[in-house]
Image (tube, rainbow, N blue to C red; front, side):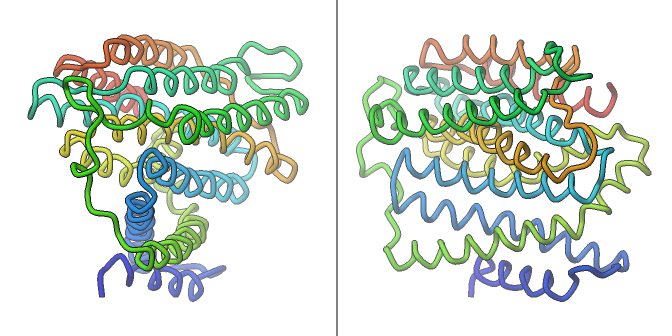
Length: 357
């Protein structure tokens, strides 16, 4: 049996055996390995389903699967952490945007440009995705810093409800555009701009294989959510003992969740399907905001303490620079090694400033 079949089952069994118990360090380490394995297995099975349904539905499946994991991690950590986790959702969502728009995009473009010199993609579809990510990011992460109805960088209950509804509606509208009305804007293209033929894609798995992956995906997601709850005190304790800022917890969560997404995007880039890589990156950023904000808005009914969503000045500068650079990358529909380097420098700057603000 493949590890992608065995690991989700082992993770679920381990979750049932350790739920609600104090664990020794050795067992904590074992559970951490199972958690990482379950995340990788979840995205693997999402990728199998993605190959079955085709593009751009495949990128959507991967993005939603990863976001479900991320939202579950955020909510579980916020419930267990108490009032001091009021910035966790903001830190994690911002980290997801920076990782996807700079890290995943940068590594994907680097992979292609080292091989082909030029990375080609559809500027119409990618531009629409980038505009949606920029709007969602500004409404959810920048405006709370400047609103006056609530104290601090936070929304009032009415403002939070409005942001949640708007985020979900805008994400749903993009999904409709991507999968129905303008599906051709999000399909891979050749360097000359022509759509890639179906023969250049990987063979589709059978319906039976896709259904099996769907079941294993659900098992893996349940395992990830539960094990994240079990491991959450260890993550926070490790960050505190290292003397790092609390925001690093959000960065760790985003890196953990988006690592498999990064691998999938780089694999697509190796096949010269840069559009799929960009669909994965921007789709994950969009779903991260469009689904996380509504989820934490509902969860805030039970959460203690304030929910701080507004970014500080340093993060707003990084966010603004990211969208300016991303716009200049997307508009021509073709990118070179230079663009990949610029995005990776922004990604490195984000990581460095997270550790040393």
